[in-house]
Amino acid sequence: MSFDLTDLRLFVHVVESGSITKGAELSHLALASASARIRGMEDMLEVPLLSRGRRGVAPTQAGQALVRHARIILAQWDRMMGELGEYAKGLKGHVRLLCNTATLTEFLPDLLSAYLNKHPNVSVDVHEKLSAEIVQDVVDGKADLGVVAKATDVGELETHPFRELTMVVVASPKHSLASKRSISFSEVLEYDTVGMFEGSSIQTYLEGHAARMGKQISYRVRLRGFLAMGRMVENNVGVAIIPDTAAQRCKETMDIRAIRLTDSWATRQLILCARSFKDLPMHVRELVDMLHS
Image (cartoon, rainbow, N blue to C red; front, top):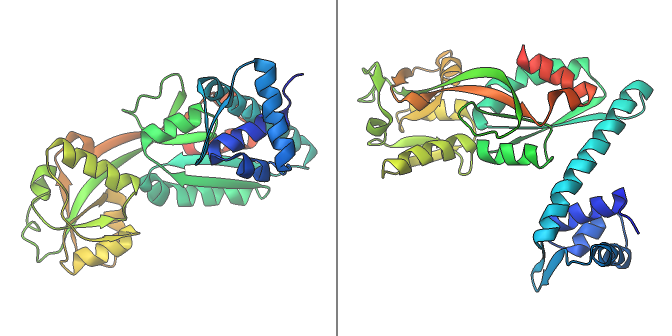
């Protein structure tokens, strides 16, 4: 007996969902058939692949090795079929892209709009994550491309430069910080803050820097967009730390002041990363070329 693509896809679905039942459903298999396939894999390898418990299943060490290789094989298969589909015009291309909050809101909308208009048969799935999570997902084959800070350890992933991102403090003209031209993050933490929603990568990043100083961010309100944050700042609810591009956009319609952050991490180089740019399907390589330009 040997594994086939259905076995590998089933096993990945089972591990990611933590349930054989759910994995079978995602793989469009009957539960009995899915269970038999997994037992067949374990019998052939002569090692348990799943640890079964009351709350579901989890991969054993052997299972973790299998799912890692399965993701790579399935990703390569999808790339092959996608590229052949480019020639046959029969398959719809798909790109899985991971990035942080600022990249998603400040850089990607215009770039992706131009790309999608040129590629009507391609869809792009964009998710926001922290840099370390992005690297791991690209390594594991869960994503085609990632945008991370240049300082991130990307291991053996290939990289291309993307953009520079600078964070600034914005404050109402009525705020006591409004007259400052520059300020340290430590000083900002003494004031009430307007923040991005809980779990956003940009806010998690700022909270990490605060924690390293032994401090916490004092939130007055947390919102889901830089323009909404700017409006709160204009009404003197608190100060906010946002990308300079977002600050300039807010200043077009709002009376706010932008203050330079003196911390070295306030300006970051962003890079594109992938397992191998040359091995990406044609439609993904064309997106890379657009993002890299």
